[in-house]
Image (tube, rainbow, N blue to C red; front, side, top):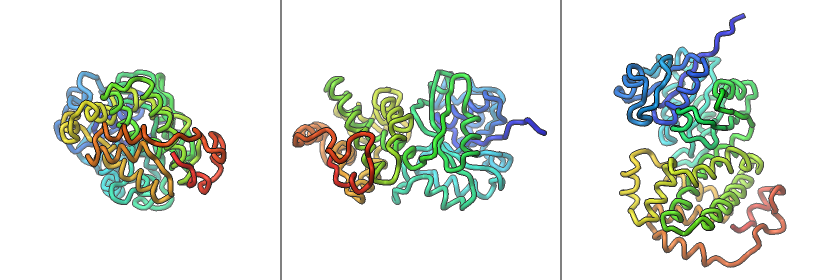
Length: 355
């Protein structure tokens, strides 16, 4: 009986894709990373580093990079997609032609499908068809720290228990813990929505509103995540773990977060265009805020923090105006009697809850 580890293809040579590919290769798995940028591919293969996104961090020599998607996917037993959400569907369509019949597909992409607002597991199910094992990797994890081998914990969610275990096993290592769950919707909502709330805390910190304000925004932001999640059919406990609270705290407080840095810049008076240009990478929160509010409106959920972030990102109001609107809201119970934490019993109850 063969004991060889399955071959894994990681799609995306950005900071997160490179960090995960490096992790998996160090765990002893035959790992190929695919990217469109020929210079990045060459840098990974010859200098063993991603000079653009993770400069100065050595990558394992066993990690092989290629610009040929067919070559990467056709030999893989497991495919891990790590592209921005706007390229997710396109990447799935492209890999489908080369995917081996037994190979499952996981992703560490966060966000929604632009335009439709669909969750990524819905997109994957439609593009790849029934019977293909799917999983989402999410949780509090900055790419730079993972690439440096610093301790990290994430969670992997899937409806396929065996595939879930395979993905978690490939990631799990001496300094990287991979837990498992089966609430894909809740895990994806947490990973997307925390980016919107990170902008809010970044704005507050940029305006020097203090640590009390930051803690209040994180806590009330978590409440918004919980209420929307349950209305959509997710489980409250998912967002009290790594996929929700963990990722939210990290993204709202860590300056490696692009979305937090966007908020900081806005709070200091920069325009959206200036802030995004200075960050120099994809900032998911602008599109994600729109999709979050579309979902909230559809289900009758009031999300005051997320709504004000959306309005600030569209430059409908200034951060100062947003702050005044938030602070002028009426006094109310922290939790209405019909919905205290731990008893989010039904979506119908949640629809009546005001934020």
